[in-house]
Length: 122
Length: 108
Image (cartoon, rainbow over all chains, first blue to last red; front, side, top):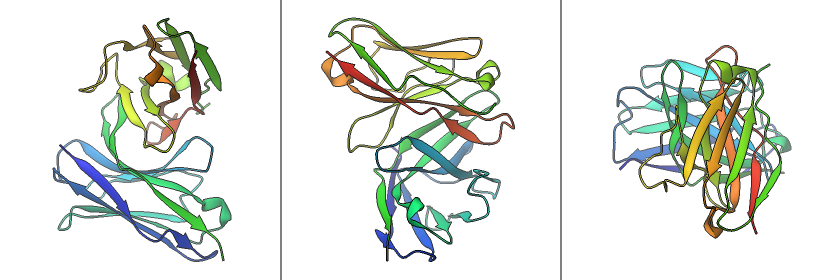
């Protein structure tokens, strides 16, 4: 059973770079048909899709974050990474990684990691 | 429009049936998926595609779609179903994912 675990600093200073890693276990990132996604949730609010990536490089980003976001995959480590720069207090959120299934009419995220809270503060 | 609209809050009596809806123009082209999120926990997929449940999801959860509206129905709501429910689908480009604002379900 595939499991995802986010890791990274819980505190980032304004104007700096937020860097998170999602480690995938129980399956390979190279499994056909799946993208790997980052989603965030601001305190007390809903879910915001950040972007997703196929292991071969096909990548899509939320247009509102595109100028600041990079998602990458390390197949040797079975990891997906997120970089967001520069950050402001508005980027304080719980960040989740998730596996994404996409076909011509269905998109669904399953499973999800447990999430990691990142606070942007000086 | 590339938005998904959900009612902020819905309530249901224990054991009764409740329908949670998600509206968006893109739902005419793409199915919605539904997620349950309990406080302090990650979202869990409960319905995807035409009406499919991942392994381990009770059969009291079902999904349907008509026009620009997708629905999640819980038949015989249980106390443990009290949670926030989010729909997701794609935007007009088909390349980006979008989420509804979420519906907080209270089981009375």
